[in-house]
Amino acid sequence: MQTHSSRISGFHNLPMADRLAKLVDISGLTPDAAEHLANTGNLEAAIADSMIENAIGTMNIPLGVATNMIVDGRDVLIPMATEESSVVAAVCNAARQCRDSGGFVTSMSGSLMIAQIQLTQVPDPEFARLRILEQKAQIQQVCDDTDPVLLKHGGGFRDLEVRVLNEARGGAMVVTHLIVDTRDAMGANAVNSMAEAVAPLIAQWTGGRPYLRILSNLADRRLARARATWTLDAIGGEAVRDGIISAYEFAHIDPYRAATHNKGIMNGVSAVVLASGNDTRAVEAGAHAYAARSGQYRSLTHFEVDRDGNLVGTIEMPLAVGLVGGATKSHPTAQVVLDILGVDSADQLARVFAAVGLAQNFSALKALATTGIQKGHMALHAKNIAVMAGAVGAEIEAVARELIARGKVRVDIAEECLQQMRA
Image (cartoon, rainbow, N blue to C red):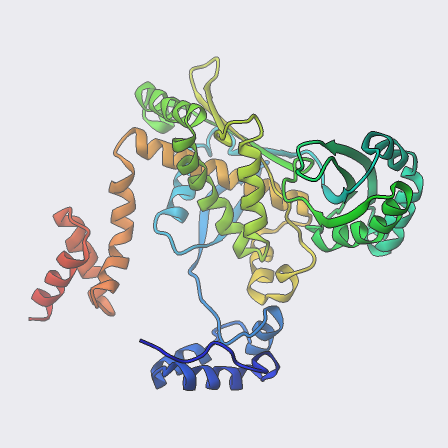
């Protein structure tokens, strides 16, 4: 058991290489482990060091490409960063099965974000609400002056909302929403700065005390939508169609099923969000909050039967993503990913992400409704199991094939296969 202290004075001031050396010394890492961490792959150490605090290395995640996707009449290759087997294959398969019916059609509600200013200790909250609303013009001026670059690109303040929340322990809260068009930026820094600038004025007008001044990740003014049609011939007939709809209905009415259902959607969405250098945590938080907007946690997708008997699916979810700022600009791989996607606006990027989520969900529901999720997933997972058992080089493929042939994708079986091969 390690007994070293986690208190390392001045650790953040050290160069990245010295930081790693100190960590190796304190933790007793082997030379091989130290060499492994020192190899930052295709992300230069200096860039990694500039992106987070106390950097000591990088964590490489496989980057794959989903094929077959048509989005709004355009063939799109989808780079996806994920460690989970079957995710990329699922998008490929779903896209292939709806290519002949036009692929995915998408739309976007806009690029509006919300900044919240929390005001407490307000003696007359309803009166204060109206006083704030009366100052809309001045608030707009302050917001637009805070980010002239955003204003130059056609963004900026758009609207004002004020809510009185009466459930707070210390009395009513007055919460001001700044509605801001962030254009091709995700917008967190922009709207947070605006909230900081406006908060003192609101306090002055109302006599209240401002606390939180921050964006909301429930970006319900920035909804991405996608739809697709799968013909009976493409998916294998009415029984498959009805099984998919039954699986969707289960998720719609049962939160326990909906959590796993929506996790499957995010398998695809988060993989392409991460690959593009966008904020996976913000997107995931917004998606799950939106799924609970009715008061019960439900599916982000819907599946129905059209007039011709085909399966039709839709998705609608908040997608606050951007092409400028953050890792989208600083991470070289993210820049390459955006080049592969061939998008020229945050709006277009979010629409592609929504299409990926719908594709991922279709494949998961089809697998559940037919062969079961494990058959395809475990077949693709067999290589991971082979590596865990100690297989290297050509052994990995050979052990994986044997596991699939036996129908037992387990580490103990992989170890047995590997011993037999090496013997």
